[in-house]
Length: 181
Length: 185
Image (tube, rainbow over all chains, first blue to last red; front, side, top):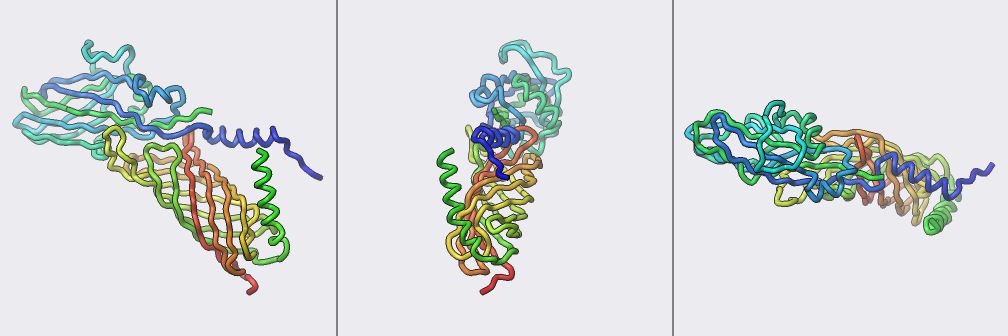
């Protein structure tokens, strides 16, 4: 007995194979967003609102993001005090416009993204993307927060007196997978 | 579609008669290596792939190939001033392919179609990314029967490795050598 597969059935099979594997248009993209911290080491904290929804790469794939594959950061820290300081960066889901001149929302409930990064007295440290991976923590929770596209970053430190503690040239790097069928 | 049918028919016309003309060896092994080119993956660059396979001729024009492959993609280029400093991901697969044409031990030029399924594992030690799922591949190849015992094998494949959501894709271009057991010299 001869079995015939019609042209439309053939295309349907191919399409099903492609769709079932998330394939028609899919890829991995890197979103880079800048941030800057500048705060007093002892007891102080800094806040920076981030809105990825305005980032061109994020915008291009906003409706089709499947997954956050990786998160990294890059920044330079300067500790001007006479004792070593340890930096913690926290992240919290946010809403509304990201206005750096606005009033910082309370840090309560924020999740640590960078923890235990110590900078010796009167020195600077440059943290590259690969270096930041060793300090990134709570990855699953952070991915969930970043997936929303709008979040706040908080920087705090311990150990220093009232001299400035700076985080400069900060970039948060989010690798996303997106597909549209 | 018309082109696809024409090319398929040509491949069968060229591949089937020599395969049908003789019994030939039924079992073989092969090893291959080549280049893997990630498709729309900003966090990977092209890398090397190698693998090995068994070959079982189940019909004169149909060869089943269980095998494994190991891919190491290249480190990503800098993006917006970010020097990632990480290695590319590794893609490991274990699965089975089937070729239409390209029967072992048949002398001469042997074009063939190839398709298969495999368990694909994508892993990056630096970022901690690790995902395994069943995926598929498909493509075309060209075999050269050097002798009843040895075939050269060149193929281009589209690899689709589904992830938790979406998929990682790559084009693989490889060349290899197959040895056929029990070939009559």
